[in-house]
Image (cartoon, rainbow, N blue to C red; front, side, top):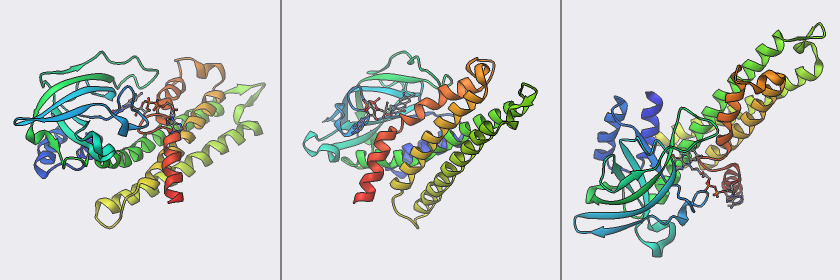
Length: 296
Ligand SMILES: Cc1cc2nc3c(=O)[nH]c(=O)nc-3n(C[C@H](O)[C@H](O)[C@H](O)COP(=O)(O)OP(=O)(O)OC[C@H]3O[C@@H](n4cnc5c(N)ncnc54)[C@H](O)[C@@H]3O)c2cc1C
């Protein structure tokens, strides 16, 4: 429940006090689930190139377009939706809207069949809706900036997911290696295996420290004593997702053939982890953000 509340808190960045109070109070009691709809079929890594268009009409807005890969999009009680309000202004012409469930003209396709994360569901959304004036979340033209702030927060949450899965993979591998006897010796008696365990531990610790650094910077920013934390957040996400991928792969290797079966959790951990290097901005996009900050 806390995680759900925190995630909802993030996607409402930029909204008015009334919008936040309404949706956060419902999220806190589990009555409302939110979704964040930025990605489009031809605009994933470069969301500023989105095509979804919002035009002013009497009493509000008409919004038309398609979003894809939207987590919870088909079941969410409200969707924070990004659309172009002024095509002349590039990313400064993008605005955010709140789209409540059941709005006529909002249609979700079937859930995608994904490699992992079977407990979560992603949907394509076809949108052709009319929204009232107060559906605008925050100021017109500020949507891209707030979407990037949502991602700054979200990347730390992805880093935390990666660290949790990496820790589980490491623990499973160590338990298995201690227990598994080959040629009369436990796997952990072989030096090569011990080196693999050491490398997993170092990779995990490095990623953990970057994750904690980003979380501290985020706390300082939220308390009003710090500035933007995009660099720390991208470093934490890149380090944790790459490290967790390698740790889970090594952990599966240590399980031998049993690791490839569904009898052990390591197979699922590998599938669940794969998306972490892609969503919330891929590893390549994190490197672009990090180098951009370093070269500025
Ligand atoms: C399970 C799941 C959940 C998701 N949840 C959400 C959600 O809730 N809300 C949402 O809005 N989106 C969501 N997404 C979408 C996700 O964020 C995008 O898939 C991701 O940002 C990548 O975009 P893309 O798939 O269009 O890939 P593309 O942008 O087409 O990228 C393809 C490849 O090219 C690389 N690439 C792209 N640009 C560059 C560059 N300039 N330099 C070098 N390499 C580059 C990418 O790293 C990638 O490897 C989700 C996706 C999945 C699969």
